[in-house]
Image 1 (cartoon, rainbow, N blue to C red):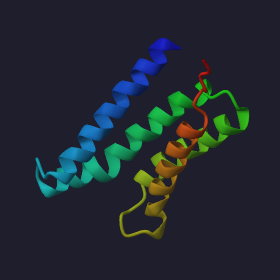
Image 2 (spheres, one colour):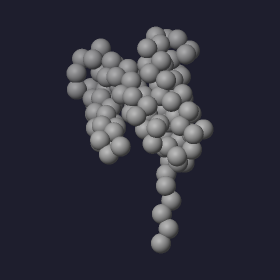
Image 3 (tube, rainbow, N blue to C red):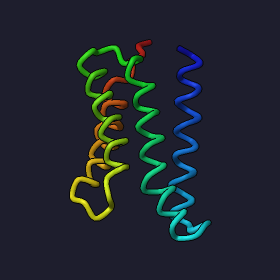
Length: 107
């Protein structure tokens, strides 16, 4: 479980680096587009997939798997397709699920 969390963290950091590379135009327009609009969502989807089994609520776990799938599938949709917006919906759903299923600590 600890190893899975480490892998998830590393994937998330790499995904953020891909997003930053696209924003700051470190590479050619084609590479920037690939990194920020495709690779970013694929890596986040994989990260959500790794996080899903760690969620305590089974309904949230299945929803996280769905968010992961939507991120990855949306990343492969053509940019001019109306379905390409799915990846953003998957990203938002995964983020919300991540925050709503945090363990609460009591003192």
